[in-house]
Length: 194
Image 1 (cartoon, rainbow, N blue to C red):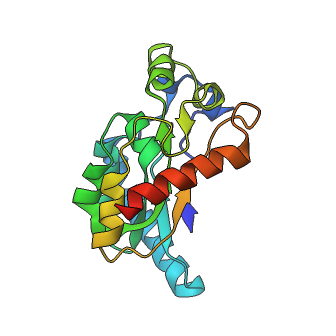
Image 2: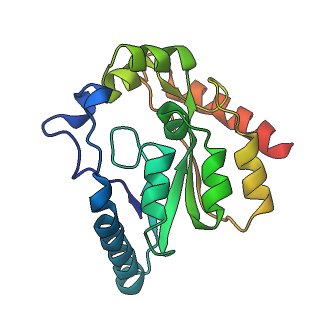
């Protein structure tokens, strides 16, 4: 089950708030939060046979590498990590850091690319997450700056057998879905074939 923390977001329309207004979890609250995540993950597994995939995400409490690490250092190993290439890059860190640090906990992968110029406009203009998505900050693999070679290497050389989800968080009026997905499929096929 994919899980992203939305209870601690800016009230109202959190994804329409400027990126600088995201709520940051106080360090003193992380241990209790991690304990609740661990308990929730254990209950999901025990009662429903589901694994928890915690999704780091812009505008949420686990956005930066340090925030993700701080939470995962305090959770039990039953809390799995959803690695999102696009959210990592947009948050300002190299997603390979997550592979290096938490490879044994990665249970789900989102393959998403980032357009650097749009990301820069969103950050420097303090735009909202939704404004960034509507402006085309995210795109499919092969249309942006993310190098997917490390994730392909991770999948080939590890015990990972989970999903690889190609995401196209963009306006379908500007990026026709069929053609966009076909480009992504071709790009990922080439990267994973190497």
